[in-house]
Image (cartoon, rainbow, N blue to C red; front, side, top):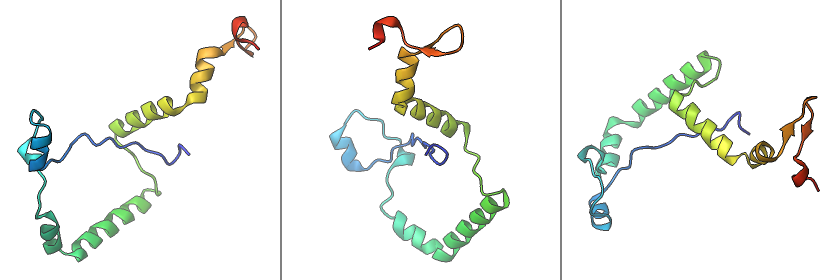
Length: 112
């Protein structure tokens, strides 16, 4: 499962005027304000250009062997998420130790 899982953290929140009413003390940078005309502006660009861009990026992906090289932020966030979700690993880390012969053992007070 983890071979294909990447955590992409979205640090930016887009806002609209009604958000200011809900949370008056919030941070609302103008550059992240929702653009109600975005759909119309994208339609003017044309589907052909969007499709051409997608094909170009797909070709580059396959030219490099069909692998992704995620940014360090994505790799770090994925590793943190994976460790957080690994309850079996957390259990073993907390309760199992290696003895002097390299065998796994649990402390005597945790044995059944």
